[in-house]
Length: 471
Ligand code: ADQ
Image (tube, rainbow, N blue to C red; front, side, top):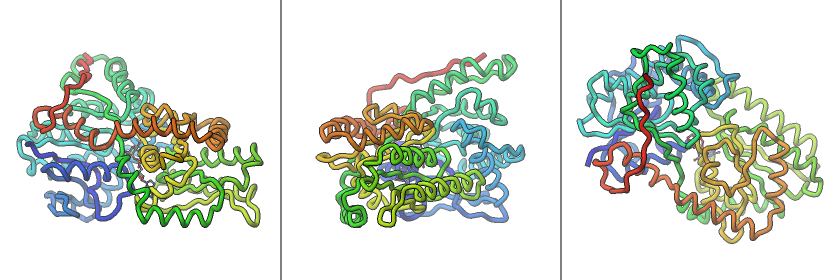
């Protein structure tokens, strides 16, 4: 069987991971031969030309170091100050410095140079996320003929937002060098296809010679999932039970409204707290009956827009406290730290309502994890943003427009008043959908799509979309 080579910006470290990617992909390499390639997390004066190969918690990992300047331009710069906000349709939060693109390409070329010598001819290479769009082209320039697939964990932008990205034409050309490009949701496939089929010729001046040939690139939605059954088990583990007891002592009879997110402007945290504020303002009977817990560990906090989101959230939480807190009652708790999965599972299980209200999200694994952790006899209610990829999978959640805080406040009231029978019915349908989209199947389906003959599993072939050349 061919080896699988997973490539992502960061290689997984020891201990619990705060991102969805690491959790999902460790499992792929636990079952198959292969290795994980990426940045070590170390910044050095000289970039490494060769990868260091190590065993990390039983996983074979090949890592390179980057220089501080290259890393800044590639990661905080082009990837997270241009691509991330633009792909999430937040052009207002994008900062464009033209030299970042050179750093982005330099790091991708460095990845390719260190990875190419490690590849065997029949290795299957699976590249992850927006940091590494150019990698296939760089590998092909070095002679790699392997099957190479790309998976985008975040949403694909609409054509207008794509146009706002410097060098978008070249980035689209890079994508055409992959054998398979996978997206989270059908809406992403539609946005990509729209650009590739209709927008590209005008962007590129209609010159046939410059048109991008996508005829060798399959494009499909592979919605990622979690492991809901593992979360079900975790939610009754001793660590989860300890967390539940601890919370019970603090909450008494109050019902818990929970939010769990990385602190990121795409997650809609200020809007969410504002919706909770409106719930308390419009429904005085619910005061002292509910408590909101928002868990949001900081991420990318060297980037100004992330610090500003953090400040905004501090201010809104302070305002809600000032308006509604009593000497003997707190309306909300805001915790800026990460928890291990067992503690999170306990919080999910205890919550009467989980607010998953990103302004835009590739998938959103918190929604999947919350569903997995529910007590089937007394499940909580999921309030989910229409703009999360998860909304395509979970129509039985209470779907809201997160920009409309009145609507979210009303959904909160409905969720808190929802009778047990309806909670059970909705949860059963959500759990079936979560199980049908579990992370193991996601990985197998992507790899089947990338290299059907190389996989041990034989699955019915899927209808994949091949885009014609845009000439
Ligand atoms: P993220 O933007 O990180 O991922 P998400 O899918 O919600 O978003 O995954 C977050 C992960 O981090 C979850 O597994 C969650 O348990 C964990 N996490 C969040 N807060 C935590 C906390 N306080 N303590 C511990 N763990 C915490 C990107 C895309 C998403 C896409 C995933 C996977 O932005 O749209 O779903 O990749 O493809």
